[in-house]
Length: 145
Image 1 (cartoon, one colour):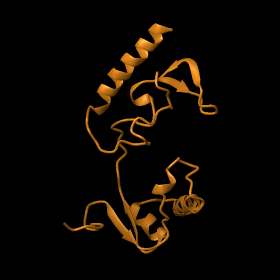
Image 2 (tube, one colour; image 1 turned 45 degrees about the vertical axis):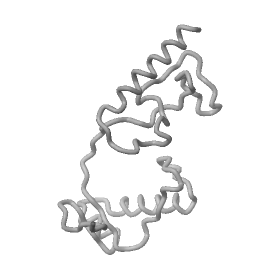
Image 3 (spheres, helix red, strand yellow; image 1 turned 180 degrees about the vertical axis):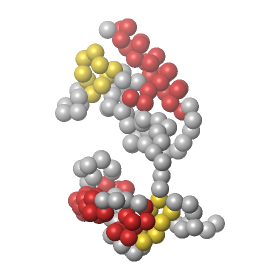
């Protein structure tokens, strides 16, 4: 099996500089593009993505040519990084980690179900069972209050 970047694929570009890559991608504000990459590299150097919360173990500097870019169309198949919840699906306060009385989240609005910020693989309908089960757990808990 061949591994690597397939430059002959539609919408896939290779360049020796970030400025050149911006041009190939049709990005009109080259300076902003380069600044975004520089900011990302600062986060990599710090070992923490303060802008988007990407885990440090996944941070890799974008600093060695050649640089690659692809055109992608934004599409959301699921929202998987909701608010943190406790075992009874109570929303936990970000500052304290304590349950917020009377506030619950289930399904894809309840975060960290998959141990991170994303699904480990794409499986249509995967969140349906989760939402039903969490709704049941939440309902039982609320009824017991």
